[in-house]
Image 1 (tube, rainbow, N blue to C red):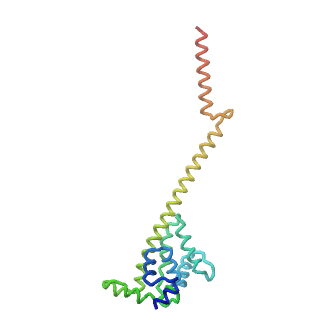
Image 2: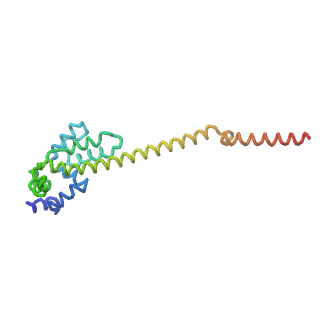
Image 3: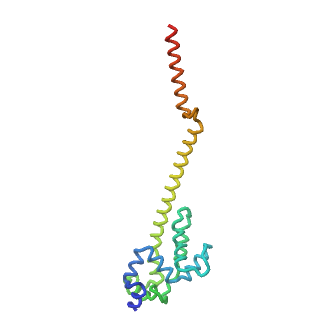
Length: 195
């Protein structure tokens, strides 16, 4: 059984797959989609998210990625969580199936009675925590881009204001200062010639 899983998962052992599930976000999301694509598709459709007819696993993965990259959607993490919370299919014929017994034998005695679905849910919980981190980083990136846009617009506004107020090609404040200086010099000359 372990040899069959190792062949289907690119040579990874069951233990390596479990470790990847708890440490590698990309692998974890792909594992969930590959294990139960019909349930993932139903969850995506239930959220009324755009999905082509008979979507591939890659297309469903793109829906998850798009949600995580949208830093403006405050419900993105809830949607990703809903999409990925699907029952574990132990009978899957790919690298994701057949872990029920393995997971149960790897649990500490205090968790021996935990269902396989709950074990997988615990692994998925780590994946969703990583999803939250990813979404937050995209949100911060969006905020920084918005702040930069605002600074650029303010800068452009100030430059436009200077351009609109130019007198004889000179910024208005400089023109007023020059006129004031000239008037001051003329006044000094006028007063000095009067004596």
